[in-house]
Length: 110
Image 1 (cartoon, one colour):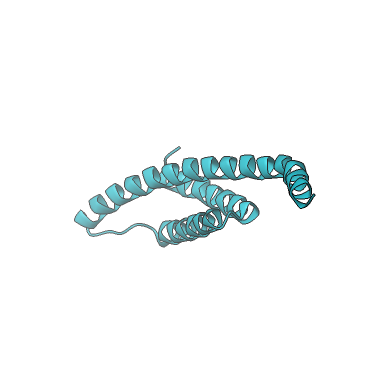
Image 2 (cartoon, rainbow, N blue to C red; image 1 turned 90 degrees about the vertical axis):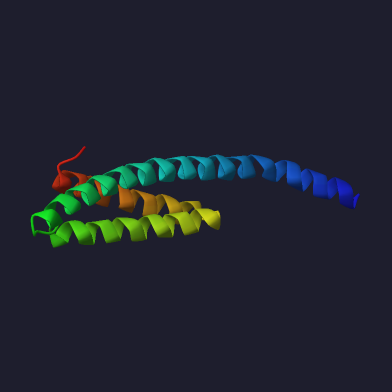
């Protein structure tokens, strides 16, 4: 009897687990896309920074600050994904994406 109760409970919970797993999978995919885009933009910024250094200049401080904020949001999203915390991962990934849009505009990219 106990086995039947355990089986029925697992059967009833499996759609909820499937939804959680689909949400986690979507969050990981979105995180990967944003992290890849951030990496590409950071490489561009590094290249620009090298040219500026050769000329005796530096990147504008707002770009440096934005980069740090993006990295922090992505770190928090990655940590949340490691804990299967979909809500925090999605929130932090969206925050990183918004900051990345600003970063790219200031950089002159996408």
